[in-house]
Image (tube, rainbow over all chains, first blue to last red; front, side, top):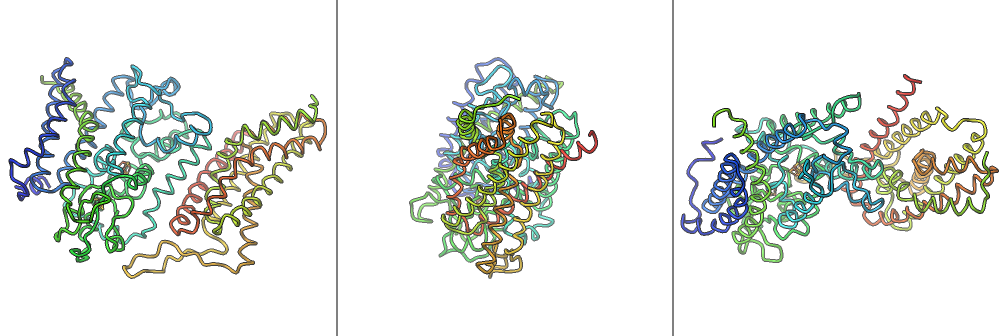
Length: 392
Length: 232
Ligand code: SF4
Ligand code: SF4
């Protein structure tokens, strides 16, 4: 894969123009990471510098080649793979284990995860209760507080909509990493033949966890269904119930995040399971950017449908010139289209009139957010790994 | 036994109902929501179904009120059979939801029906004869309403304890009837679900939710029953 991806890209823009377009992102990255250079710690400085270079270079390549998906994927997979490293390291440093002891839950020391957000609204509205054992404001033990994470989520969601699943979600990055390993899909065709109703499963899970969380006053998804507990934190196993929970987490992670993405080259967990992804789809309605299809150029070859990692295209939607509601704006369909019929689009403008301008506008917002949120996670994880290395 | 004057009891019941309505809504919502989503279109029809559901729920309440009042004097508060009842009702709710998810007996999902591009249509519901249909919906409303009416959610238990302390059976029944009206106010928004109903995707999602909830209730009720069977 590396040789294919690193092969000299076809020039879409001149080097000078690409550099010029990259300048705002380079400045933004510097702005974001300058504070970390003021703090002591060589590992932290190296981590920040690496991230500035990494994010700026990837953006330059997006400008130079006109392609989005493959360069975004380098960042996204790095995020998915490095996030657990930094997170687990900080858990082990603070509490000596990945499991959450009950007393930590009671004292509100559980880092807040955005997956809980859809489950918060009803209990908060009906009973003014936050059904998560975290603290609202940051504390010494828990900087990932509820208020901070909700603020980050809101800002990012307004900018990228469901693009969250391509530029922000470290969990999706893990899956994309496993999907990127094989050269071609072993059971790709079978996935396309799956009953299209299965695409509705994430909505059903969303509704299920929202109503049941309201009934039980606890975040049901986190307690019973989240595959990513396997690589983050989990309740300490001390009873049949907690053992069962752990069994469910591991089974879902192994099946939906490792095995199926590897066999299908699709993000199966995101496409067929994740309720937060379904929730984010709602915000595609208010987001300014989308992917459209120029029907005059489209020859219905369905290359784009094959390329889409989360089955957000159907033959019918392509005929209508649109994606399905769950499109995460990864750009794979646009990059795969040989007729330039799949285009980035700014809502309210004529389709395919200035698609590159729409892409640029979207990417500036998305990459700035990715640098700020994902970039700091990457820097932290790199610093952690350097700290572990025996040779200094 | 402490005898509570009925005038105090009615006001208290209404307040208790209104105050704990959101909790009732949260407890019964998981059952009502998917069920309402698969009901026929139209606010009027939905309102009728909801009324039948609530009436059945009221009868469940009254039955419970009568039982706790009668039991109040003879059975200690910590009666262990409560968890048998609790577990059994949850398992029955699971069965009821599964029946709805399957669309039995009058709705049928058409998996074989294919559109031009080879993908099967999202879902197709065969319409049963009108008379048949309304009878089926009515009996569903009655079953689920009754079962949620006797499911022992926290506010229900509080009301049960109060009813058991009242001086006569009539007072206990009245207490629960008033308590019921306090909670019922919170169910009104469900009528608006008729607006989204009949999008085939909504029906499919509602059925999937019903299956998931059935699994949950079966697990919750089953584990209570197993625990009681093992530990007594
Ligand atoms: S679908 Fe869920 S896990 Fe996948 S990227 Fe989106 S939020 Fe993350
Ligand atoms: S439709 Fe295109 S942009 Fe949207 S998720 Fe699929 S490949 Fe990515």
